[in-house]
Length: 118
Image 1 (cartoon, helix red, strand yellow):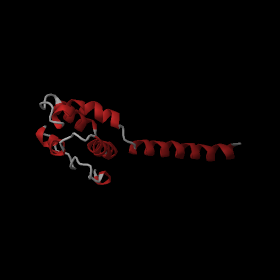
Image 2 (tube, one colour; image 1 turned 120 degrees about the vertical axis):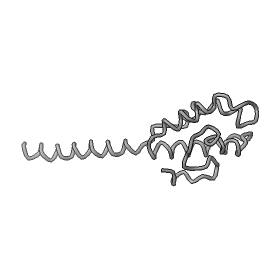
Image 3 (tube, helix red, strand yellow; image 1 turned 180 degrees about the horizontal axis):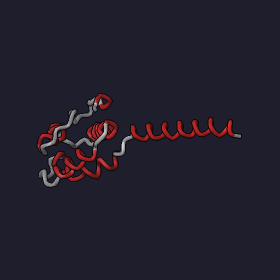
Image 4 (cartoon, one colour; image 1 turned 45 degrees about the horizontal axis):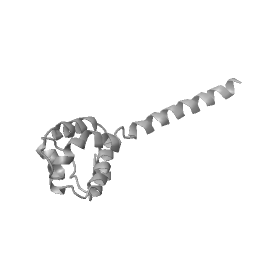
């Protein structure tokens, strides 16, 4: 019996370690979260309103994206959103980080390669 318990404990510890490593690489920010942060920006980037409280959302999202996986998830979502809203002024969308005083490591664009974001 003791000969079985030791290998099972080793397998259990290895499984727990593998799950912990896998969870660390998963993004905590999904597209719904990105939209929630940036919904106040839609009037501005569609030329239907002022910048308003948009920068609060941009800064909040920037602060929330702490890991590489988070930043890549945000990038992928922004890329998808930029391509799906036809009325979005791409230049205004791309200029939001600078307009709000936030330095992100990529351009907001439908052509951004999000796998290179760190």
